[in-house]
Image (cartoon, rainbow, N blue to C red; front, side, top):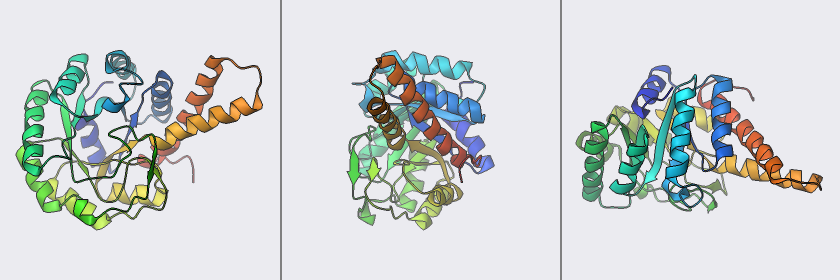
Amino acid sequence: MLVTLKENLLKAEEGNYAVGAFNVPTLESARAAMEAAEELQAPIILAHAEAHNNIMPIELIGPILIDMARKATVPVTVHLDHGSSITIIKKAIAIGFTSVMIDASHMSLQENVKRVKEVVKYAHQHNVSVEAELGVMTSSGIGGEETYAGNQDQSVDLYTDPIIAKEFVEKTKIDALAASFGTVHGIYSSVPQLDFERLKDIHENIKIPVVMHGGSGLSKKDYIRTINSGVRKINYYSYSAKAGAEAVKKYINLNTNLFYHDLTIVAKNAIKDDYKRAISIFTNKELVK
């Protein structure tokens, strides 16, 4: 069933779990995500990153994701990840997305608030939820997360301030806040050091769901701690994409008579297995110890 982000995350708040938000730039990854969610009977967020328009334009993938969501037996939100402008956000809403993210975190606080308020006004008129970001996370590219992020060390000055976060949420009326507390986009080159106390303070101050970007590659212990500290949406992409690539590479090395469609099946199954591992932790339906 197709639901808004607000609806999906309110239930997560009540149940103290997180909903996985999976960027699905291909049909194979979209099918993998939906099959994983259905098999585990878990809620899910199908996300399209604006940065992935060069792989799969939103005009093509959007209607497919919405159709999948409507036919699903579990709650599914279709979400625009890291939207950079009101133009792409209006396009996503016109297509039928039930959630959008406006990323103006690179702007001044005043400009961030102004841009987000504009989006919230438009989106809420169409019963669409809004996520915004406050604070700075290092990244290999907005929304894409395809390359290695390198060392995740960053100044705490770039992290989300709990007091400013409260003011930001009150002024903008957003439905979820992406916070910076030590994660990064991409593949981790060293063990991340997460500021859980900051995360708890943010969650207690803002009274709405917290979103964790750069959610791939954490330990099970860290996932559980972030959830218990208030994270309700976990963006997850890099490691599932890597799992698909590694499976295809292995299959090619072991087989000589190949057809491209065989590779898509191999990739889909590997991505699905990785999604199931993630979902089982996010929702406390663990399959893997």
